[in-house]
Amino acid sequence: MAVEEQVSPTRMNLLMRKAQIKLAQQGVDLLKSKRDALVQEFFSIVRKLLASRDELERVTHRAYHSLIIAKAVDGPEAVNSAAFAGKRDILITIQRRNVWGVKIPNIEKVNFERYITGRNVSPIGVSTRVQIAAQRFEQAMNLILDVASTEVLLRRIGNEIRKTTRRVNALEQILIPRLRAQMRYIRDTLEERAREDTFRLKRLKKAKLKKSTAK
Image (cartoon, rainbow, N blue to C red; front, side, top):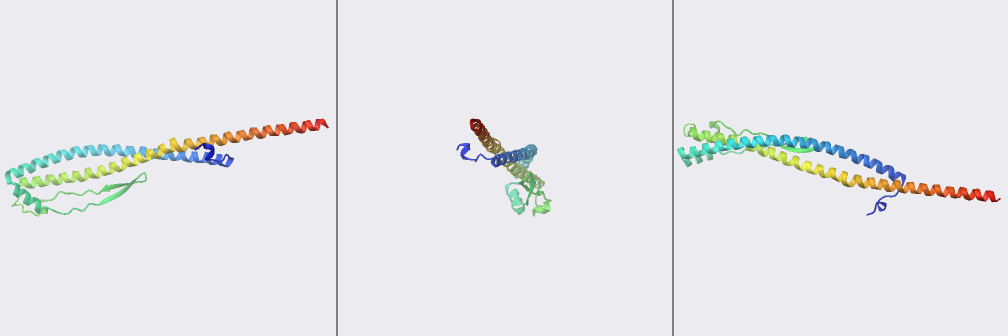
């Protein structure tokens, strides 16, 4: 669609386009500030996530090693029996915090580690090897929850960064150029009208002067 089909070339519309461009530019500046803050938060979380994953791999490796030893020495039945006895429900609380207007989910930390008496097994009837395996898997669960919470957070911030970037691009590459093109059209049209009016006034004055001289 041509620019002249979108806007009427009046001084009021010229002033409106100037105000709209100023407002759009302010929006761009705010969105860029928001994006910069989110990017900084994103990389801070990435560093935390990498450290948590390394720790999770280390703890999980130790836990599986302990489980293999417990099964080899005490037998799978003893390990399975202790595992079934220690089953429980875990309540996870998800809170939300605000980062530049973005609602970020935050999983409240839960400590999965228990004393042996909290696993519904007899300290006498369960070997130290099984207890160590259970403890290390509980430690791994703490880290799994931490990593999951961090990954959810990272995904949400990453999505918000992409959305903010699209909005910045839409303003900088589409809206503002279109408003500026409309401004140029209005200004050029008004200047052309002014030149035509000046030319007509000169012709009228010239005609009047000629008529006055002829008398």
